[in-house]
Length: 340
Image (tube, rainbow, N blue to C red; front, side):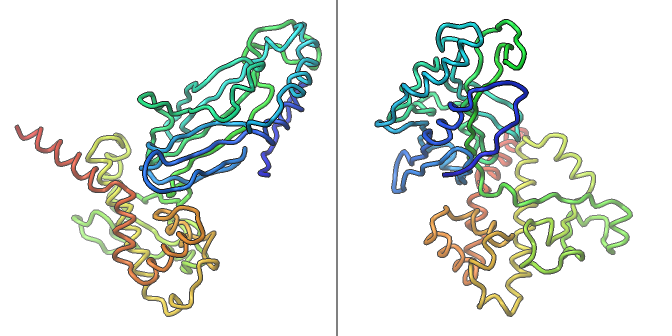
């Protein structure tokens, strides 16, 4: 069972409810169409989804059909009575979806704690035609929180919660983009750096092995292994309007250039043929593999063999997962519209 760090609360909370949620609630991720298996996530887990799956998979939150909720509801009544309520009506379950990258949170589902058994067999968080914004973010991942909170202000008592909205139990699930944690931050190519590197004025990008971490087998992020420079003015323009189609296209092209540079360096190494996936599972190479693979052992091995033996096709698959063609099409459409 996955473990989740518990926050230290300055007051009494629903400790038994917290433990029950950690042990009995699951998030399920299932393909809506085509082959694929349902993934079951325990609280505190992270599941990596490719962009297409992120916006198409059915996501449900569930407890087992045979789980009994009565005992845990009775345990919650103890705190309810301490707070001046005769029953659990002051406790509400709320499920939130959020994007740490885009910094927004939305409410996905709300029901009284007494209706906890409504999760038996699963409740869809992605109803057809009403998929919430937090679960249709192909490139940035989502966080799903289930919280039990106080739904009204109560009288102040020492050591007890009293504020409206105070959460008393919480579990969290994360849906991540495969590229999350790959650590890529282009460096501004300033006039001084351009002179230092011997680059002419019309050079927009430049890559070199990071002199402080020249061993790719030890690198855990792109930044560990490669220093990737982008003209400071171009980088500033992209950063000021990152969602503009041309900025989005440039960001993908820069990322792909860094990937191609790393691939070129790796495929010049004599040790590549003897490398096993277990050697690089937690390193940069393992993260590159996960961009194009799901988490099954057979798929990871298949993608790793592709990485070793067919670097051009492997790089093309990364390009596909970056939605490069769509971004290029969006940029060209914008250009066509502006020329009319």
